[in-house]
Length: 335
Image 1 (cartoon, rainbow, N blue to C red):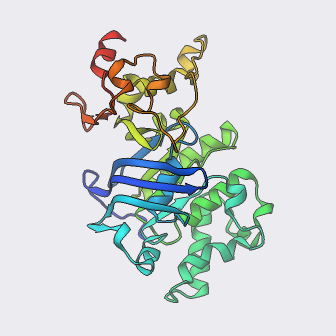
Image 2: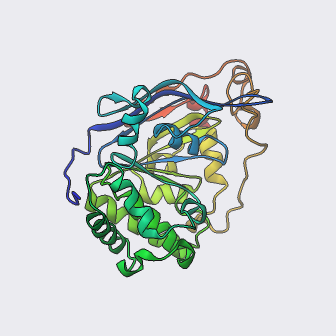
Image 3: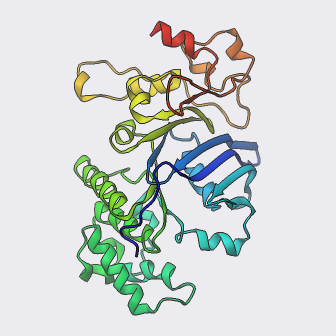
């Protein structure tokens, strides 16, 4: 296990371009991911935020090609170290999963098999190719449990013998078992109390530095992303609405949807501020609205927003920042 792997934090390790993933159901085709593009650099923590149903988990599952029929990836590319993951064979992509890119699923209560001991679940990814003995796999698994703060002697316990926070740490250890370069965390702190959430945040930050990981953090909690991420993207209805440095998006958002998300979350320095929920509900992705996907809920919409879908553009004044809005310059002057 290369605990001190060195990397160039400025080099790109993962690039998702114009990804499109559809869900097929009797009512029609759900465009769950509708032209999503993001990049992850080596050694950084990149956050993806948005309301439930905006496509965050589908993005994670698509990157690892865990989407199963009748759902299907229908377009785009996912480049990792010069290879398009969408063009790999099933055998080739299985070597990427866990070995190169791993995933910490949300809902730790359900992500672990209740019928199997933790030891069996942790060593399986290592032993699938027959290159590691059971004793070697157990030694590595015990080392990772200790790394995430769990006594190695508990490796033969069943999942029900652990608390919710400990299950989440087991999942994190499991995601690191094959020494991946990228870890995707899908709502890893959901349903945990704030004390345990803080412990998990600290643990992941420590592991990232010690193991030189590149991390993609998926959550609806902007407070988590502001504390952990270098850059972040705001996702809505399967598309990226705004992307840039985490500090910029938190302190100086440009897109009305980003503003709405921030206004609906409490902050420590403005405890007396009245929260402003975003009116309406996310769109029906079987029959999405014409024009901007956010315009039915947008307080700044104009006539063009109802007719034409905005083209994403890079902002010259912010490093690597991207926005998909017709009126962001005018809105920025007004607010």
